[in-house]
Length: 349
Length: 284
Image (cartoon, rainbow over all chains, first blue to last red; front, side, top):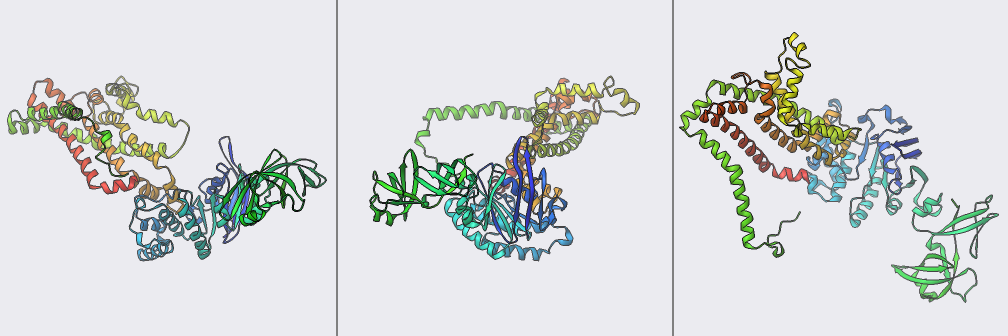
C-alpha cells in the first residue's frame, strides 16, 4: 500500500512544525524520516498515523483520505518510541489486544486469536515469553513485542517512531539487521523516524531528510550521500569539510584550487563541501598538482587514518587508507600536497 | 532497584542516637495514636459489654448509623466518578485554565468545613438564594439527606481526583494512543487500559474518601440541624451524647467510627500485601 502526503502543514501555537510537506512512499518500501530533533519528523509520522490532524493538506493511504475513514478501518500499525506496552497485560494479551477489540462480527475466535498471536510471537522470536509482563522484559524484547502487537492487526502500513532510540548500541545493531530481514519477509510499506543517520543509511530503501518542518531531499542512501541536494543535507549526512569559495563563470575557486560547478549563472560567494575521503594527499616532491598543507595530527581509525590538515587558516579533515599513508611516509608536522577529487558547491546563504 | 545494603559503616549512627530516635518515634506514636484509640475502647466498655451493646442498639444511634452509611453510599460513588473524570481531563489533556481548575479542586481542602456548610445553608436554606423556589416546589435540601450528601461531597471532593491526577500525568497518553491505533474505541480504551492502570490509586482514594465521608463533622453539622433520629450522622450523634454527659454511649458510638478507621487501614494493607507483585509490576 502506498502512502501519499500532500502539502501537509501543522502548527502548535506559534511554532510551525510542518510547512507544506509532500511525500510519496511506494508500496513495500522502507522509508526513513531523518532529521535533527525539532525538524518535524515525528509530527509527520503522527499525521500519517492519524494521531494528529493536519491544519492543511491531506494524507492518503492507498488512495483513501485518512480523515474520511474510521480508525479501525485504517489499519495503521504504529510502534511508539517507548513502546507503550500495556503494562498490566502479559505479552500474549498485548499482542492479542488488536484482535480482541474488533467488532464482534470481525473478531476471530479464541482459538484463532491464540494461533495468530503464537505465530506473531514466533516471528519476533519471543514464543518463550508469552506469559511475561512488560516490566520483566529487556528493552530489545519490549521493542519486539511492540512490533508484534502492531503487526497483529495486519496493517496496511507500519510506522515506527525512533524504533531503536531507547536501546543500547549493541542491541540496536542486532535489531537493525533483524528488522531489515523482517521487512523483506513481510514486505509491508514502512516508515520510521530516526535522528541517527547510520540507522537510516543502513536500513532504509529511501531517506527523507527533514529540517525545520520541511523535507530537504528524498533519495536513496547512496544518492543522498553522494549528491546532497542542499547545504543542510551535506552537513547533516556524514561529515564534510566546509570551505568558503568564490564562483565565477561556472568555476569555483578555493584558495589555489579550481573546481567545475553547476552554478553556471552565478557569480559570488559560495560554500564547497568536501568529504574527508574526497581529499587526496601526496608527497611534495611527487607530482606538483594540488596545494600545500601542513599535517597537524594523524588519528588511526581502524583501517583508515584521519589526517587533520592546516591549509592557510582553514582546518581540513582527510580520510586515507593507513597502508597508503605508510607508503607516502607522511608524519605530523610535515607539509604535503592535497587535491580535491569532488566537492558539492552551494551559493552562500 | 538493588537490595538495600544493611552494613554501611558511613551511615551507622552511634548507639545512643539510634535508640533516642527509635524511642522518640515510638513514644510519639503511642501518645498521639495508640493512646486515644485505646481510650475510646476503654471508655466505651467501662460499664461492661451489655451497656456497650445497649448504647449501640438505641434507636437514635441506629438511625445515625443508617444515615452515615446512606450519605457515604451516595457521596462516595459520585465523588469517585467525578474524581476519575476530573483526573482524566486534567491528567491527559492540555487546555487553557488547567491550573485554575486544579486549584479549584483543592478548594475544599483549604476552606474550613464549617464555612462549606454555611455556603449550602446560604444557597438552599429558607432565607437562601434558592430557598423560596425550593419551598414552592416542596423540595427539602437543608436539614435533610440531600443537604448532608451535598456537604459531604463538597468536603471529600479532592480525595479521589488528587490521588489520580499525578499518576495519570506521569503515565501520559501513549498507552491510550497505542490502543487507539489498534482499533479500540473510547470506552474500551477507558475500561481496558486507563482504569487498570489507575485501579490501585483509585482504590486508595476511595478508601480515604470513604473514611472522611463517614467521619465528617463540621460541614455536616451546619446543614444537618441535629434532628435526632432523622438527620444525625455518627459524628454528630457522638457530639450530642457527649454534651449530655452520656459517656458510655458517646464512646460506644465513637468506637464504631474508630473501628471503621481500623477496617479501612486493614483493607488497604491487605490489598497492598495481596497484590504486591502486581503493584510492583505495573509501577515498573
